[in-house]
Length: 233
Image: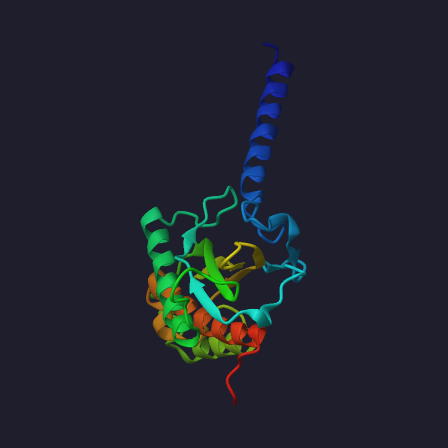
């Protein structure tokens, strides 16, 4: 092989490697596209350019007809654009269980479940865990221990930003007609605990618990508004 041929071969190999390295993580960017393996992927719209928030609402859905809610166990997403990094399968399953427990507890207290087979007024809620970012335990907590760190995280809390060194959850919540199985809505969201929630900084599991609890409370309020069953103030 001549020197010129060798250089050309090395150059081609470098280009191929670069294409591979950039193509692999690109599919995992929910800022570019909705998760590809979700049923409503092709129908979802990005709520804000550059965000990880995507939404689909069935134009024929009438949420005021629903009065009962079933919460399915949270599942772990296995699509090519899952975003779990080096988080183990066991931890992914554990995080999904935490989400299930919080949702079933909060929603179960606010809405009745059907006593028999789901009827036409039953909403089936399903959460799909799409990804997670780890909390740097100890370090994240320490950033709240100094006046400067506390002030910075207080500011982040006010403007809705995530806390320093604190992880997050990326998930999809889907709503189905409990009787027919028709998909009514899908929403993809990334959530972090409030930056001033110090217990949420102890570990990634604590972060997940905080996110799951906050989301469950917010889901109850959202469902009440959608169904027109909001309690009197």
